[in-house]
Image (tube, rainbow, N blue to C red; front, side, top):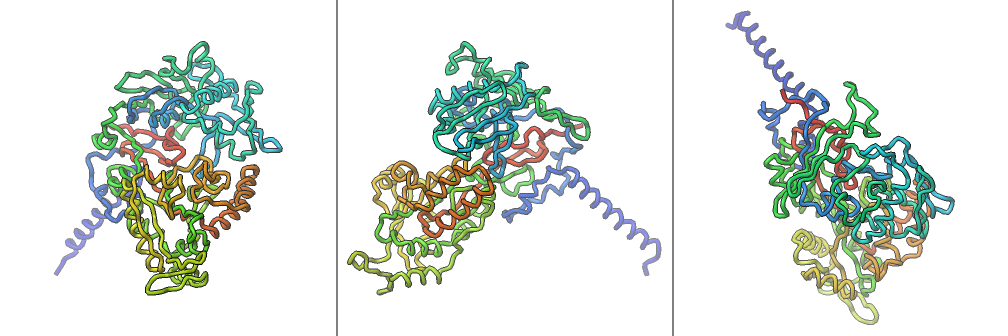
Length: 569
């Protein structure tokens, strides 16, 4: 028989266990960003729950402090001038030193930075940007519109040597109206002009009397941003320190701390053969930006924080609209119903991509959904073909076209050096077979594929593109792009052309969105291209870095001034 003392002892033991569990839970909650909830709640089924153990690497997070060094990775820079560099790392890191008139947020909306506001003329061809009046360069000289004009002139004069040259593709003129006003005139109305003003602004006074294409000052940058340049050691590192006089650091947190929290940034320079993944693995680097091929191995790990975001890499199948079979809209729509794009993503690349009809990033302000127009429906695909005159003979669908009995057999070009596309193509082939559509996959070199596209000698081609920073899909759907742009299908629809033109002329965002939705319906009815998916990229963070991580394709280091490194006692 159990006496009262034993009962009390057992109750006391249970109480102590509950208190210990409660203490552990509180510590997990307090540590906030030390646990990557996305990896626990996401698609990865092999979750590592080792973070519940008392890991010796855990750092007690007492909240933001102004201290610490952030270690980053770069290959050897050609120049530290962000508007002249061909180095993608330098271009990305320029956000620490330099700022632009406008930046894009995760919804692809233009947000004010150095320009506090902007407005178009009545015809939409002239845009005026009004600068803030409290911005100073790191050498304490005030920012003016002449700096913006100087930057724009440098980009235009550099031509293809500037990564921002496309921002001025349709610009007729630009000028500093006065010290706080910058004006841009376009060749034709472009309602996405603010989205083009995302290039870093460089100081005119700093380069007076210098040949900007070759001056050593390019490797001693001066900006207006939250970090100031300290030194550049060739083939070793680039060091930055926080700018205590940053114009945007006036807000303080509960502890009275101003931004940025991290006091130094050390950009380590590695050789071209060095691996950013290895550098991160060895904890030499705190943050890396990885594409699908590289971040997958990190998914589900508890010793890092991984944040996926939709990249601007779009994959699609182009139909040759001059092909006698694919000329028929019904065949293209039947293919769209027969292909299960969700299955392609979920089975072949789970968690690596998101399905999309159009080359506009899903869940952005213009395209605020990822619901696709054609869910798989084999019976509907078969019915469409039957209604349009395709008849089965000995297991093959035939139709008389131009007096010739034609089988429903098509060829899909896929470049041989892309294993993922080949794998997806094989699955598409099997899916189309269920609808009675015979698809032959032809593997060709990338060079041969381009030659066949240029000559128009293809039925269907599996290809991809990098979408621009503005959600204008003219490059793929405008008839003006036939033969000169990416409109390789040869798609031409007057209604779509009209909508594309209206969108470029319309400055009211709600009207632009209405035009886009209406245009999307027309495009999906015509189906000149079968949109497949966008790949995900990811930012991966060492767990010692804390704060709100919200990377997007347009701003991979979004919110970096709020990152911090907890004190280690």
